[in-house]
Image 1 (cartoon, rainbow, N blue to C red):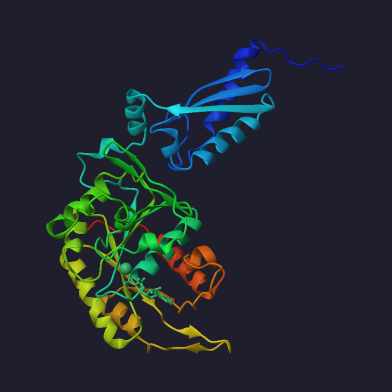
Image 2 (tube, rainbow, N blue to C red):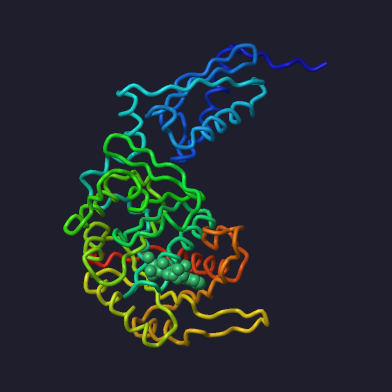
Length: 376
Ligand SMILES: Nc1ncnc2c1ncn2[C@@H]1O[C@H](COP(=O)(O)OP(=O)(O)O)[C@@H](O)[C@H]1O
Ligand SMILES: [Mg+2]
């Protein structure tokens, strides 16, 4: 008969197993380890029952997605053979613990830097010369598709007056507001900030007129974006102040121009591309939206003309990265209010967005034009 290997200190061993398993649990809001954020204060194991003390940086009923946070901790513990039952207690952090939580988000370290993002974040600005061409639709679907390809993604609605990104989803989680910092809510796994999230509250709308720049600055600097690999920016129409602010605050932004297929539309779109170039921002591609309608007979109908995207891409000397078909009106009920990449990823439009996302990912980061040329 084989002997079991002798364990020198079973209690210590058990502690290690418990600690390792709790560390595997992530917080659904920040996607960081619950231990690194200080969300788990202690775990005690007694006769197979693990008692977990959870502490949240705001009062527990205000912490977004607390149910899934608890669930993640429970299932991480239940994966060990030592635990047969988990009991949880939740209370609020003390002010000192709150400060540690904010610090662990990694957001406060950035104050003195030019961009609120590390060099590993690609900033994808979706622009066009005018409204109604589908910038917001392209932004949300592109963001969702890049996320589904396995990347961390944030989406910033920089259309401060004409915000629409938050209304394109039916079920957005809650934001965490802590001191001067907002941790964005998640929807389908991506983080989202839009003026629309705050418009319904009784807080005054502070971003009128000259406050536009400062609203955008708050959206960048007071938001813990948590270093996503991609930040998709839904730009306001035209070539106005926000483009200038974006160029100042996000010098790493890459611009993509949305147009419709009419030949006249492409000239309007070109203005936004030229404005970006004047600001020394790279324009990396053209996206044609509402390119065609696929009839029940399987044929393509080019309802809004053709060629606009190609002409624009040629004149800007960049690639036409995608032609998005018209998305048929969704019938009442069902998937109402969800972007097509979430509700119907296998559809022709869904696939067109995945193809677009793959191309943008494959392009890789833009070469920084502003960096001094080094010759070695
Ligand atoms: N490919 C598409 N197929 C069908 N409708 C679309 C498509 N793209 C955009 N739309 C619709 O056109 C309108 C304008 O789109 P939106 O994304 O808000 O444009 P923008 O942000 O440029 O103003 C919206 O009602 C949107 O649902
Ligand atoms: Mg829009």
